[in-house]
Length: 396
Ligand code: NAD
Ligand code: MG
Image (tube, rainbow, N blue to C red):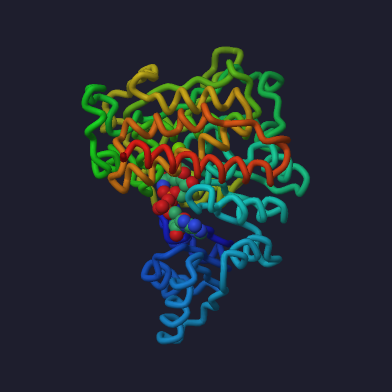
């Protein structure tokens, strides 16, 4: 097994599942970006064969530290090495848990090499769409969704759909709708007028889930649900009427599938990513995840609210982009990454994230074929440049 993004939040949950199943998996490689201390801990505990840090100085520091402690893990150099690991013969399972667009090329390399790809890095799928799913169909790579909602939906789908992700026919399988649930984030009960002054720390304090900073801010704006809407469209090949977003503040139901006979299947569990991770690592078998079982008597009430686009303009932008074009979703994702980084750095207000993304979508000029990765990478780059310019203008 290979873990791309081993030093992050999903990486940590994956390692927790490995810790619970020490005999079942062989950790071949791990990658990170800058957190040398976290990577060193992983090497001490799990002795992977290879490790890579995307940042060259961090890679050197890791190499020195491993040598000092006489640990056996070999450090490979450079970003190219990350993609090489993703294609390595010895690897069967690839956990794709790098955050953002940086994960695209290594994740795509794993897909093209026909690996079983445990997909957490939703941005990779959002920015490359059909290219990603077509590459999987060509290579025979099995994509297994880690994102808790898509994992829930996957678990509630019949096998015919599970085996034909990206090219499945929901109607033929008797599915009428995917009910995509989301907690609504930390500001679901705030007055909308107070949203311009919320701080990065408040935005990152998710009420139910502990996650990396970027996805925590995305959850607060519900851009995360928007990206997940696009992710669901790509994985389950949906038509517009086949997905509905429902706010479910308790995060106990992780999403549902409604069938044409009126049945609704829901997947439930604690809000702990180790559950969907254990599911994809063992699929179609089951393994223990280390997560406590649900205690229904202590749950209290489960509630459901329709999303309000005036509170969550990013969700609306993402749904519109989803039905506009692939270039629009690529642009949306790139602009959002820049806007979130600017918000976390204290440069723009929370409510200006949506403004930056909207401005970039407005300025999007179509560049050519949506089926070419080079075109989408160009759209991504241009959107980043434009989003940075909008941020600069806002800052004065
Ligand atoms: P994180 O910030 O905690 O970790 C990100 C990982 O990516 C780290 O290992 C980091 O070193 C690595 N990384 C960052 N920049 C890199 C670069 N330029 N090159 C190579 N590696 C780089 O993020 P996370 O919360 O673990 O999320 C990871 C992915 O999983 C995201 O796409 C997120 O949307 C998705 N996801 C996360 C959760 C969650 O609960 N955390 C749930 C669902 C989906
Ligand atoms: Mg999710």
